Image (cartoon, rainbow, N blue to C red; front, side):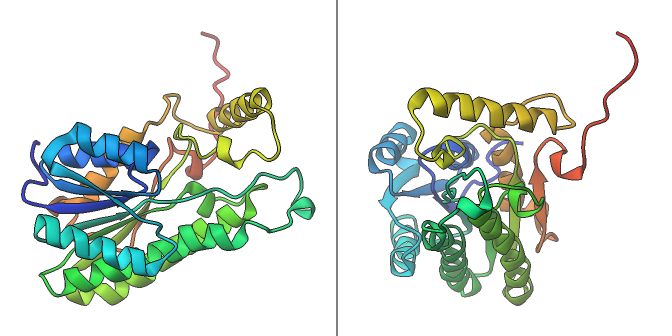
Length: 269
């Protein structure tokens, strides 16, 4: 299918890089006009310029609900409406060797971006959509909010909160034909892993990320690596009428990681 989003207007928060950029590029390719919201001004402006008239940038810190409200208003003013809201902006908490070593200094920032930002984005977009025939809200979570594990506790807790909030919002907004779903990516190469490194030199960060990525590969049933485009394809599904009877779901896009450990074949090749 092509031009599945023709005539649609979307916002993607955290759209300047990683998964967000993949979603922005996919949506524009499918005919949508997209507002790229981010705090990384240079990257976001460059992306919007690259994509042309169907993309615009607005600097937005999603931890400030007033800025999120202004973002929605700007999208409606510039492009004439809002049909799809992707709450993708997120930050990781710092990785500590033990939970006892975690001073929780970044807890409030992680929750403000990852949870409050999603709630504000859902509320502001939902208000417009409810008054204009409905729409689709897509929250980007993580398998870290589904699977328990050590490390980055604040991040895991924030993503679990996003999953539960998504279901609650879906119930309340269904009356207005506003669908709310979440995507829980896993093992997707993005900068967020390296940003969780604490007090490390560059070489240490490289080794740290390589070790984390290898563990992810070992825990993934599917052999192929995931990409931002894989997540973007799932977002496209939720953004279109193909998912018109789907709301309140949390869809893992993780190569089967959250389903269980891979089975190692004992057969000789």
